[in-house]
Image (tube, rainbow, N blue to C red; front, side, top):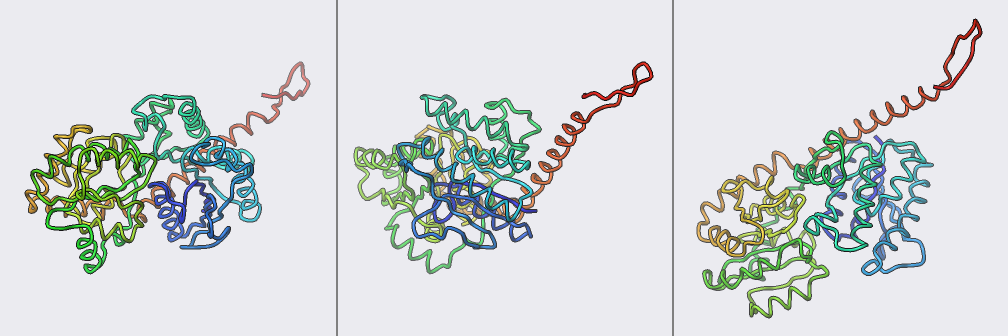
Length: 420
């Protein structure tokens, strides 16, 4: 199939898990023989149009006026979508696609325009929702506006994809969708990339560890990722495990607030804010850690947990969303109630105190990753969604065409024509 994929982030622009997901999915689809073009935002010094990893990547600068992304998100999105639409039409004129695949609301306007103009099936993947990020409510006008665009994307899409059964329930409820319109295709992981050489793991351990155990948090520094709870648990963990270190790999709008919290808790050298860490270094860091903690308040899937499992590192996760489906308590990791700081500390302590059990769970988690979460498997399931979307689109258009055909009517011996 010829796939036109749209995402507001793609390497080298990586903000969260979405860009990494689209990157790996696109290349896996290309390996399977599909012709994939990704439309995405431009980044400084990146080519505007290139083929990499078997995927054509067209990077589009947003139209003027140039709005700051951080403070004028909605205006920036509209300018970007104008440019994205033109780029999509230009690509389709030379290489007509069979399906348009939109990832999240930031590309909804362009994707919907291309769907109608080119008369193509649209598949929409909802990676997270604005209501979910705010624990079920929409606090301000911008949140309500984003929610409305999310609803519109799911309405216009012929098929909607979510990464977990939890997210399928969430989008069905939030956007009043027929349950059979939404398909679950779990995230994947390139497991081999999360098995770094022992020398690199040793270097990471020496750099971040000392005489005590090492914990790793990886993710955007935003409220829903729950780092504030892990920081609150650190005083307990320091008393139980002298020399313990927490490495925070990630950046985000709450960076300064979380650093201030660490200072107020007098955590000192026991917490290191490492900033954004590239995948190669992150893989070595994950493999070097004694435990990866995913303390999310809201988590559609939990890509960080999947990557930690691929690295063979014991997991402690909050009992929310997709994490509940990914981590089976006492078998592939430990779960605790989200927001329960004491429960978080107890779970981490249990992993650190019983390394035999912890490594057994880590091996079981890695086996699940290898069985269910290869990108080739994810790509095959996604291609099946494309086929169903195309079949449904053709059936719908054929039905509309039949209803528009004139019909023959015999009245009083005369042959008449009339519309249905």
